[in-house]
Length: 289
Image 1 (cartoon, rainbow, N blue to C red):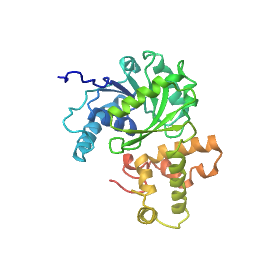
Image 2 (tube, rainbow, N blue to C red):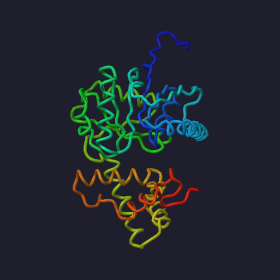
Image 3 (tube, one colour):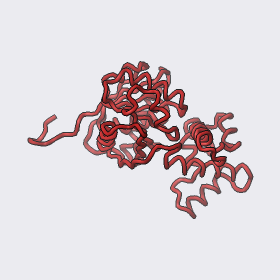
């Protein structure tokens, strides 16, 4: 690559993304589409193999929608099942299941592998960052960054600074998000932060309206779109988030805030029990088959 004289190029980023689920794939697509190399790690080899095809498809979709910068070759993707891949990363983004114990265990293990000073980014929608930081030897390296789904189409990311998060980690995350052309909005650490604390109880209420027979899912979404300007409607949004992820997040909020409005509705719990998880399973409030 030829660099113009006196041009100060941004530092090169090399990411490790932990978790090949919906969010891990979406974050990987975002990074690859901006030319960053990504090592995608998951303990499930079959899921990793499927992720490769999904990433290819979503990269094509993102390009067609004009969501990627023109003239940049996609970054290199490597997949693997070992956390040791994180040792050479300039940043690690954890996107495993929304379970505090699971996230803490993964972050604790990876923090022992990375070079000191490497920012560890937890993509959590509801778990307080400081709760997870307690599992790390260097808690000052942990930052929360809540990407919305799909990350390559949504230009703003919620950045959560925990009480122990250090300035170097914040600066590194800001640099990374700038390389990804994302606007960072920094908020204080709390259960659900801002977006989930507002959105997830609203979706829960929308599900209760359907459960009580007041309106269909289609009617709820049509009214929220047409009258209140919600871009997709809360129940289509639930399908996009993944209803299992939504229920997990609501349980975290309910346990940590005591707000009974965050107790998952019976309808959401039943949909999860029936395997109707939203877009990723083909059915949720809507049928995508």
